[in-house]
Image (cartoon, rainbow, N blue to C red; front, side):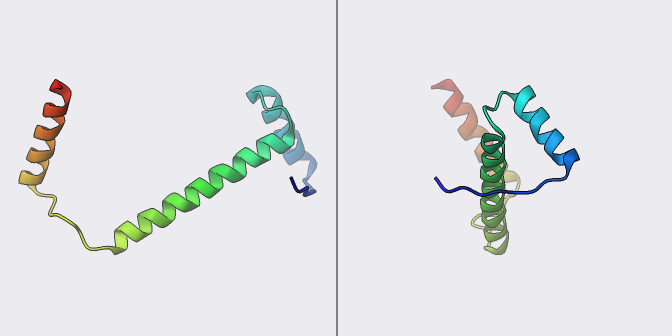
Length: 79
């Protein structure tokens, strides 16, 4: 595992220390790794959403579509 040193103002260091203590992290590194992973997930999701928004609709979301969707959900619930 690589190492990276970061400098934080005292207020941010205190916040990180508080999060480590109150949220059960074993170290500030573990807390920061979790924040980075969550940011990666958010960026990935944002990319997927933008990709979906740019693509043409696959089906028209009209009354019939939602009716069929409700029927599928009901049928799945009965199984």
